[in-house]
Length: 139
Image (cartoon, rainbow, N blue to C red):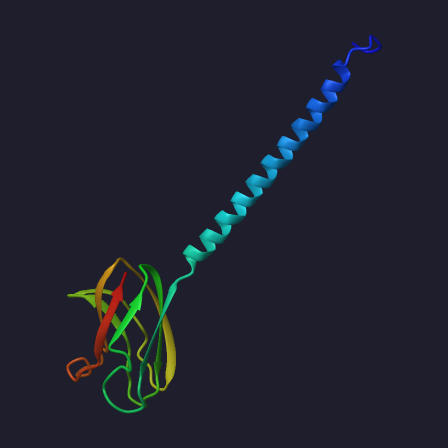
């Protein structure tokens, strides 16, 4: 009670300070957890990038085997050739995505893939049969 010489008022002040410290600590922990979640989400949302290219001459890709992590994958195709080329991604006859058909340029497309072995090839008539194909391994 106030004025009776007891320490009741002091305990209340100490308890209040303790409450404020616990509240501050809780806010700091929550802020840290939120920041970690945002970083984790940003990392998870960033697609893997696969670069494929075709040389100036020949019906082939410069890469025969490429690797990526499962999920959203960005495929960047550079065609240095004056011939039309593209990239198609499939397993068997199931197509998962394809690029534009281009000459002397770069094109990009996205696919979302589960772990497995996928085929990539050029769908311009005769190019795949001539050897313009490869394997995309997703882990």
